[in-house]
Length: 333
Image 1 (cartoon, rainbow, N blue to C red):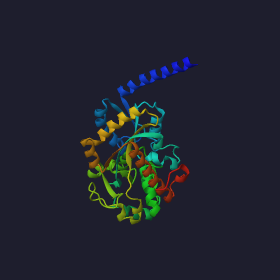
Image 2 (cartoon, rainbow, N blue to C red):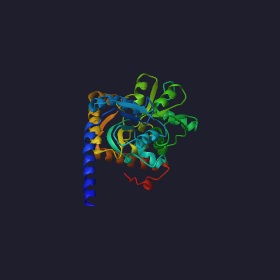
Image 3 (cartoon, rainbow, N blue to C red):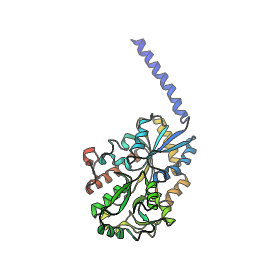
Image 4 (cartoon, rainbow, N blue to C red):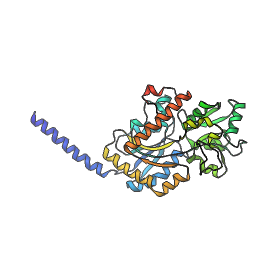
């Protein structure tokens, strides 16, 4: 019995000795980066701007793949089904934090290990440039007179547009038809083609189109004007009552499977910390209305929990949550 125990201990020690160098050599091949939203959207733009700087720090290539669908559930589930070896990372947005209350999935970011909460963005409600509305107040007036007529671009339950619509409807009435797309990018394409009338978007996805004159900004989801879109009024000009939900905005994060070894998490965390801090990426965020956060470890987890609490209970108040936050253990802010 003692001989068997000693043999088992020796094998365990040998296994640990064999595994540790493997961690030290990570990464030995390319890493796959799964983007949970479609090409051309804010998450995609952030991922493709950040990744070259992370590759430089990590010493390998990160092959980016868009896996949109199900308000990002498909992309996140793809990563959760892959081996926990650090060779598949999720480029995600804020949506997973709302999956439980929207009945989309029984998991959120707590099912993963956050590598980096990259930054937080601003929201703009945009419309095709040829629309007569000059601001969000004009759109609201039109919607009141023509209920159910306007077509709003969306990304599914729990997506940014549906969350903004819920906030608006908690203080006013905006009766519109939702047209769902696989991300900001396809929604913008549809808007440019005249297939939808307006869409709440991340500024990172919409700013260049507004600057070029292809789209117009009707309102920014802020309490005051912003430098990036000085001619676009804050939403509080049209809806002063919505101020209680502000400040609010989407965010972007990188995460891996929960049981990924600590040594690999540390290596990835260091590379993404350097990538987010790179001056070129910092410039990209600033030019697109984003604020760098670069949060890791406990700070990242606290941010995710706080955002989830504030947003989930706001949706509950607006009557848009399918499941009470209390039922799924989300505390009040």
